[in-house]
Image 1 (cartoon, rainbow, N blue to C red):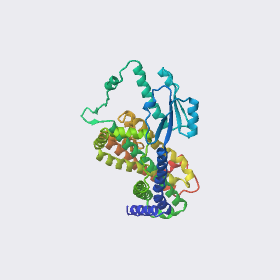
Image 2 (image 1 turned 30 degrees about the horizontal axis):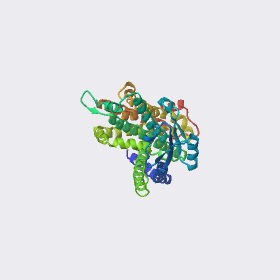
Image 3 (image 1 turned 135 degrees about the vertical axis):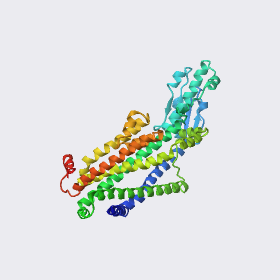
Image 4 (image 1 turned 135 degrees about the horizontal axis):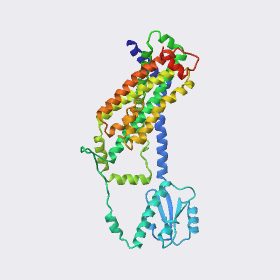
Length: 433
């Protein structure tokens, strides 16, 4: 297997020394950060925009609940008709006019409230106004009905259901959110890694095949060694690229945040108020506790094993496709059947693992080798028995070994075939050679 290390080294150096690889490794995170920075900057400009809203409250019920903020000023109009109010708002070029009609019936008032503006108003502002007016009119309706609001407020009870297993293990909604986040991120990373670097392996095989370099290489190297060398070498180049992206992205974020003052956590005013309200509680402590409740060691080891196993499984198939065709156009008929199980795994993870991580569908798909790298990674944070993890990993490794043999058979014949697009029937014939 001495040739394998040489092939790995050659593939790795060929990839990382390629000019396009270097340029995209450096520019990709910078372009992405620049796009995010532009969006964040524009969002800040939009959020910092000051708006003046005129209020014509003929009912006298709601004007007192509309308090001005740093970004919105409420100008309450007195003794003015609706037409005059609209004309005044237009003349002053204010953001809009909130009109609350006068009526003793609360239902009639709520059904005829209008907001007049030159353009379509902000969804955030309309939602905020609706929430405030709804609460105020509800309180007024209760008071007119002789209901004591203080008693209602005092009678309200907040319920937070504590979650605990029969063995005494406690959890919470925040625990589930963190678990779902880890599983979703893991599955997404694997999906993107396979798509990006699987195609890179396939293109590399096609390039060497069409340039006839493969005929010289194959005279001294076994096909399976050449295929594994390409897979491992390209994988190492991909890992290198990801590391560089992470470093450059982190540095760029710090620079933009510190020098240019661009914040990447800008939120609409209504969301900021909700976040501040949540910050007054002990939710931060709950998040920290939820993080420590995660099986960190198990997650790290499982992520490495299933990520590596899933990537190698699909990469061997990509290498076989590259050997079977002469150009990328001919790969379409073969790539889609390979991607279908991976896409299915993502959908199963999103729509079944979230709802029932230990249900029949989730469990079955976590054992199928072509879907287990995604589905099992999404299940593990919720507590999967070790025997299930080991069985799933064993099936994945066994399938990978079979797939390598299968792909090597196609690779051995396909890399020397030119000028003809093979059919599925011909591919099966190659397995007998």
